[in-house]
Image (cartoon, rainbow, N blue to C red; front, top):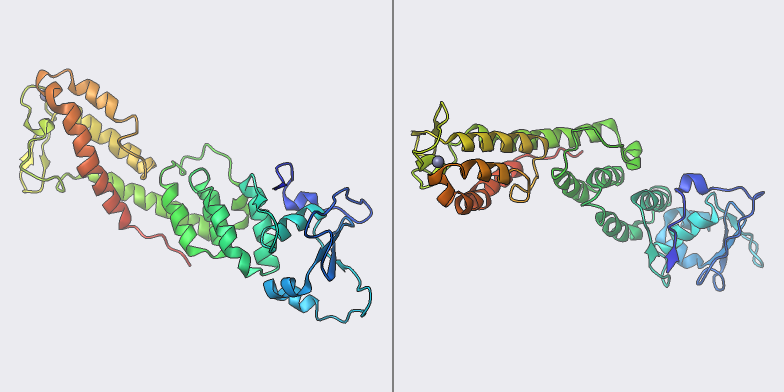
Length: 314
Ligand SMILES: [Zn+2]
C-alpha cells in the first residue's frame, strides 16, 4: 500500500529537474506502458496512453501531439514524482489503494486530478475519501465540496457543521478555506446562524408543547415558579417551575451556538436534574420525564425546525 503520510502538500513538494528525486516508481508504473511521464524532479513513470486518454481530455489532447514512432520522448510533467505517484494511484487501474492521512493531502490530489486534468472518473472515489472527514472537519469538507461543485456533499457537510460551534472563532482556519470564495463561506455561516436561530425558537415559544400534559415542570405546585407562565398548544398559559425555565434558557443558548448539538449527550441535563431534585415532588419524576421529553419531543422539534432552513448553493 502506498504510504504518503510524510508527504507535504503538493505545492511544497515540487522539485526541479536540477534537484533529482530519489523516488522510485513502483508497479505498475515501472515496467509496462507505452508512454513515459517525466516528473519535474526527473523520475519516469510508464503509463498506457489509452488509459490516460480515456481518463482525461487533457491527456488525450497531449497525446495528439506528433511523436517519434520509435522511442517517444518523455512527456515533462509539472508535478513532482511524489505528487505524480499520488494522482496516478488515485484512479489508475491495477494500482493498490492510496492511503491519504490528511484532508490537505487529499485536497491537493483532488485539485490536480479533477480541476487540472479533468479526470472525472476519479470524482466518485475522491468524494468517498473526502466524506470520511465529515465528522471531524465538516467546514473543510464543505470548502472542498464547494470548490469542486459537489452540491450534495456541501449540503451534507453544512448539516454536519451544525454539531460544531463554528461561529465561535477560537479555532484555526482549515487550509481548504483558502480555496473557496467568501460568498460560499458566507453562505455556510448564514446557514449555521439561521439554523441556530430556528433551533433556539423551541425555547422562546412553547406553543408547540402539547397541552394538557403531565410533565412535572408544569404540574408541580411545590417548588418555585417562574414569574411568567408559558402558552402551550391549547392556547392556555401554564406556570413553569423555575428550574425548568433555567434549563430552557441554557438549551436555547446552546442551540443558538451549536444547532446540531445532541441535547441528550450534552452537559445541559445534569444541572437541571440536580436543581429539580431539590423539590420532593419534581424529584420523583424528573429523571424519567425529562429524558423522555428531550428525546421524544424537544429534539425532534429542533430537527424539524432545522430541516426548514435551506443552505443556499449556487
Ligand atoms: Zn417541583
